[in-house]
Length: 271
Image (cartoon, rainbow, N blue to C red; front, side, top):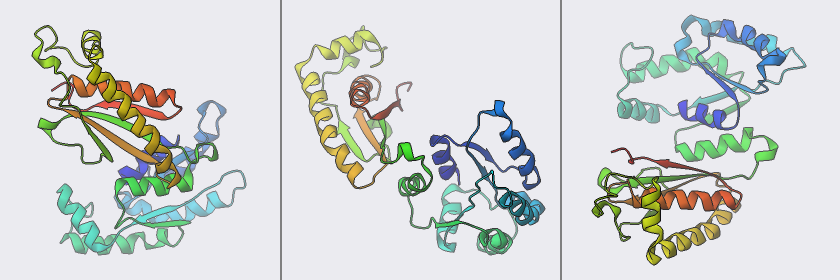
């Protein structure tokens, strides 16, 4: 559910998690006020609502009667095996907290059945990854103006702390000159100008960045053609503080100049 909410937030929706069902009409009334500036909202309703869930069909019916509001109910579900695996991996107890996890899942299905019957869109997330679910939701709910856009994340990291598990592409820059071994640069990072200038003096660094950018220029249109809307690029050095940071920044600037929406994150820069 949190992954889906992240997608809606990225699409510009005002998101509220676990708003009591009885408060939905009041929330809609607030949205109608001109000063709210909110045109799209996504509300999460789940089993944590408890007895409030019983009033959802009535609230939904009243909203559907209005001609000035467009409502869509999206129901996310998964197989028993997938849900059991997720609870085991996260080690979080089921919200119902009664009996075994499987018994709680069965009870949850029964309680949510009336809401599922009202759904406009039912998505079985059993075999979806974070990225495939994101692509599916963006295809269905992205504003027309953003259709076909690809969201890029450039992540710098240190190999000593592990490879980013969600990376689609990995670039290893451990072969480049290492500022860590320059006393006056050791305590700085790839965000600092002295480190940037030190690396920029190297022909290897300049050519590496140019070749990485060229590869992305070639690959990204192909990803877009195949409908991929989310690409994460990992750039790694030994500690994730100098070379990977500077190279990731350079790649991000290049992609943004090319008209992509690229954000740069430095996972290990403070370690």
